[in-house]
Image 1: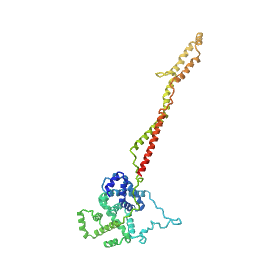
Image 2: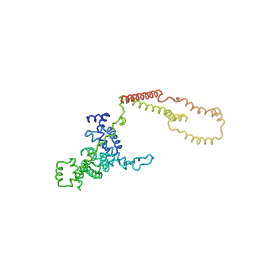
Image 3: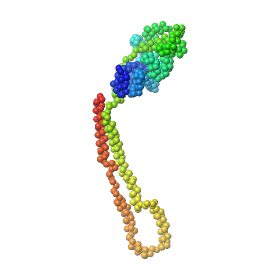
Image 4: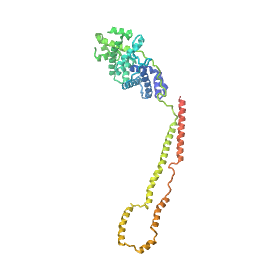
Length: 202
Length: 223
């Protein structure tokens, strides 16, 4: 895939070229949104919104890392969504029984991912990590998602989050420590290798 | 617990974001500082767990359609000409209607002062003193009546020879009518002829029709 040619064509309004870029980056964009927002439906909306605004604003792309530019767009979309949630907090409709009564233990109270019998180890690990990620402040979460999940280097993270490099370093260190503390509560859910590592280090 | 600067240093060291000097200094301290090693291991464990997090496949494709991004089909180059002509013709038509509606009122307003001149016994270039003359007339006539209380027969004969007062006044009353009749008749013609308005309307309709056809064909080709 000739990314530069596709970007140039997209800047001239060629939607097919931009769709090729979308197919290449959609997993990364969706996962970034999912880890920041913690909800699959919201992540889908944010990803779609990201690509729409990216196409509309692609003329403002002046070279450099397209991935970082796109990631910045998705982060902005996620922040918009988080702000919207803060302004208008919503409560999901509670599931009902056949009799039309609300269930006593809806899904979000008794999370099936937390019981190893119901889900695989990978799902449990993912859920535990997502839970711990959501305990972090948004700024910390963003840095950790970009650096450790998306694998961007520090300068890319700084460019994407529009934050000085020193701030990225400190935020990442704090976020990792907090995550480690949080994950200690899910020792039994962590893969054996991580538990052994923890035992050997402590 | 280490101070936060050291923790940040360890985190950067883990990602190989320290320069060689800083990295060497830190590595020299590690063997003699078990707490530093412990924190480093904690940070590494957290980072490795995050890196092991499986990447989810997108539940659907996010490819965009033209409708989603509000793209419109490319229209022919002549399209703006028709659009401009339609807009111009519409404006002109509106102006012509307004002009035709307002013209009679403007004419009436313009002819109103002439009518005043005509009914007022003829115009005078300087400010008319009709009111003052009328006011002064009784004052001058009253002494005359006192001096000559009984009208003489001569006066009576002369008055008999004269036409009656009614007859004298008749031409004066008839004069304004004749003046009004002498004025050119008010023209009832429209300011903008109807033919022009029809032409403008035809232009508008034809241009609109052409634009609609152009847009339709462009949309079909685009799809």
